[in-house]
Image 1: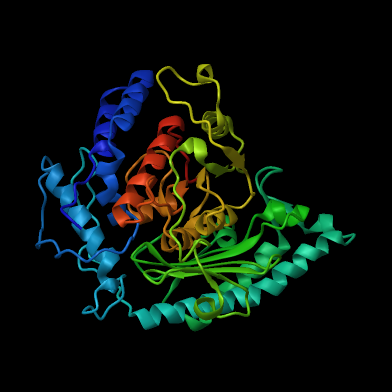
Image 2: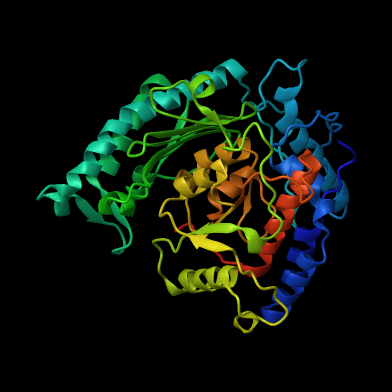
Length: 450
């Protein structure tokens, strides 16, 4: 891969947004987005989205980057990310892709760049053993989830529901039972690993993502589907190392669909009693053929969710964004904004299942504001290993840790260029074009952690 040119789009927009407020800033942001050539951003996408390229030389040792030398800082960021994402693909490198000596540089405008040392390194064999453990957890949880799913027909079904904050945010005794079982297994067999789970966080435990190996689990993603008997329900099990998703297991026991991925080894769909790599199907489902092109948002099937948070400061701009994505009438949009007009819109009721539809190539784009790290952690690595991209939903450049905890997700499936070019550069440029179109029409929604 040639010299990488990191896009200054995001930083330029953020600097100007600090200097302006209101509609002027929004209009300038949109102009910045629209005038960027998606093809020029392909190298950045290759680096950020874990596509396989020969590893470039590591960046020289650096202890300080001047605050004004943003181009050099951004270039170092790209070189580091490429190295960290491609280590495994080098036949001379004995370690897996989670080994790195220099962490991501923070180049936020008007802030001092900071460096972190990543000390957690694992071999490919160890990562594969973590995957096997994740599959074992799914095998344990599956029958329990299925039992609970079928119990909705019992006279006592109403007693199973516990409302969290509102009628759209439900938890069942099955969520709590599954998470308790999974956490106990992790505590017993992975003693040096951390744990973040939806129900334990809801119970008051601190949710703090560190560089340590961390299992991030949603025991039942799609609880409302679970309660109503809609079969898009799954346990989502992700493992992060150095705050990066490296192992993902998503299992839908109702449909007996097991989705798995290890960084650098591809993504697979199988049944729970099958060995993914030998008996499952490589994702996307078009494999080994090139993924079909995705010329524009108007040709895309888009998934999104309204979510359980119905407070007006989040719900109203989310509804406006969904309207913009599907709009035909230019008068419905702010002046100067492009019309989204997606080919179709879908809501599956589960972040994990939406992301797996993207990984398979059944859904082209998934956009949502509001999901938590346990909703998306496993899905991020599976989508990436299926050739898709995962970025911030509202147009900011973020680290993997910020992507996990930022509660704003945009995924685009793998695709080739419009002329059928399936090279990494052409695919990245095509995906970036779709990302730019989505960023142009959605609102910049702030989604709080509390």
